[in-house]
Structures are given as structure tokens and as C-alpha cells.
Length: 138
Image (tube, rainbow, N blue to C red; front, side, top):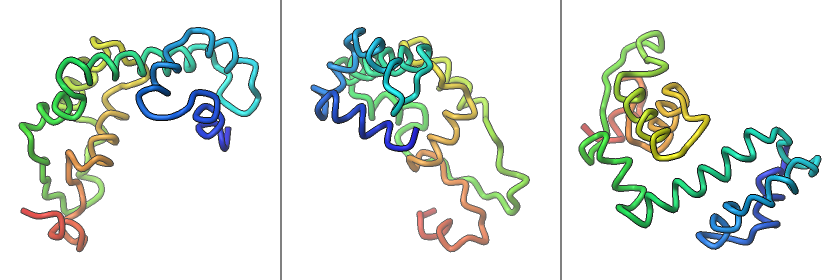
């Protein structure tokens, strides 16, 4: 599947216009037959549903605002001493996951949502011994 994202982008253009084209159901039929991308119809349809959900949230309230509401607009700064303390999911990621699913997203369970929250800076789970922990502010 290496390069699959590039193949999808090439076939759909860019930006919001690309997302609108991803919403076209015919792309599901095209994608299933393309050996360069994921050929699991459920995942392709989930991508289409996710594009629609994103555009809907963006139009109504802004996707960023929607997401940051879950953390009251500021990153959660945990103070874990060991990797064993870092959770795979939290009650917050479970709530966020349910909200995403209610809006039409799929394949967004609480573990992947928590990892996404870490990756986007909504949660700082750097260990207190890591130089980046302090570098990201207190």
C-alpha cells in the first residue's frame, strides 16, 4: 500500500475539492480495483464517510474547534514517569471516539483517537524525563 495516499491524491486533486471528490461513491469502485491502494471496500467507504463527516463539521463549526472542545482549548499535559503509565486510551478518548462515530467517522476507536490526540498536540504524554516534555510548556 506504499504510495496509496499519493495515488488517491493524484486521482482526486487537492484540498477541500479533493475531499468533495472523495465523497463520490464511484471512487469506491475505482479504489477496489486499484492494486496501489487499500482494496478493502469497507475501508474505502469509511474514507468516503470520513471525508463527508469532516466537510460537514468544518462547514458547521470548524473541525479544529470541534476537536479542541474536548480538551477545553488547551493541551492536556500529563506527568508520566514511565512508559508503563501512559494509557492506550482514556475516558476522554472514548468520549471523543463516540462523538466522531456519531458524526459519521468510522475506524476511529478510542485507542487510535488517543494516539491522534497525542500526535496533534492535544495531549502531551512525553515522559517527564524527556526534554520535549518541558519544551512543550507547563
